[in-house]
Amino acid sequence: MSSSQDTDNTKPVSLKQIGLTFFKVGLIGFGGGPGMLAIIRQEVVEKKKWIGDEELATAVAMGQMLPGPFVSNYAEYIGYRLAGIKGMVCAAVALLLPGFILMCALGILYFRFGTLPLIAKIFAGIQPVVAGILAWATWSIGRSNIKSLKGVIIGTIAAIALFFKGDVLLVVLGCGVLGIVLSGIKPKKTPPIMTLTPVPFLITTASSLGPSIQKAGELALVFFKMGTVIFGGGFAAIPFLQHEVVQLRGWLTMQEFVDAVALGQMTPGPVAIMATFIGFKVLGLPGALIATIGTFLPSALMLLGLIHAYNRIRGNTWAQAFLSGVMPAVCGMLLVSTVFIAKTTLTGLVPALIAVITLILLLRFRVEPIWLLLAGAILGLILP
Image 1: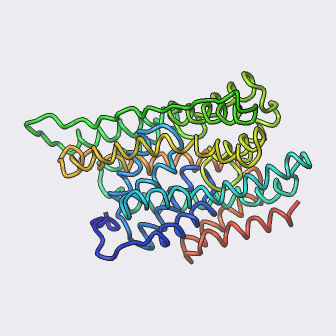
Image 2: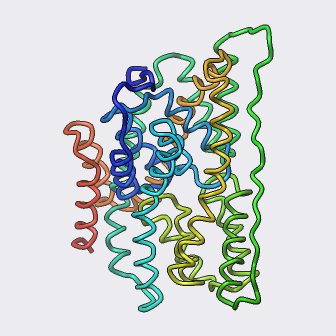
């Protein structure tokens, strides 16, 4: 892999650099997990060369193994590799901060004025740009990581599996196992198994201290539980949240919940940032903070344990063969995500032209995605 390199950098990476980089990713990271993974790779592998594709594959594999949103898991792993626990915290906070601020602002506007037609026009212009960015990312990542028949086979299998709605976690793990099989290694000992120790948690509600504190405890419990047990990324959390916050507790109406899901997809950052919107409705800014931390903290704690286990086996032949199957799988899944998003967003000639022009500008002129997203937003305001 041409962009792979050893991860023990001679030049240390400062927390400021990590923070600015992941803040940028969180600011322009439209398109959910696939779109954000593409931007993360562009920033930390292609441009800054902090890690290589092999280390990125490790981040993806670990991120998929854990509950909670995938993208924050990727960022936390990279931050840990660059600067330990401080880097992990810095990367996660910086990644989530733009979406958190924007979601709180939209919450204020939404619950004061009810509708957001201007925002809808802006994101209508951004969506075809996202489709073009994903197409470019698929080509770029595929060209760097699929260079053999083995990679083609694994990538194709992953694409087919995801197309028929296979579970993403199972696809990643299955392709990792296939990487081992196709590598033809025959070690004498069985490979060590990475175990994940459950993270115990305790949340106490203090009903005697008032309804606000009681509701804060209940809010924390709901989102910590979601972040602990829901696998499959932000979209997998939607049925859980609908049951908890609409049907069971009545914190949101069904229309408000649908709008929360829509805003989670339209705003930058992980789709699960919709938790911020829900928390804001329940308890204002403190509720937004509680819901956000509850969503993203459990997987971060589990990731620390998983990294500790991986450090002991990262040089193992089986581990290397497993990871050799992960990156082609990511390429295949990214291709399917691009097709699905394009099918949804390219509903006419103008959006299709915007996506094609975006792809050309990225491939031929290497324009920064942020400028293309801004141009898309302006077009959304201008065009009918």
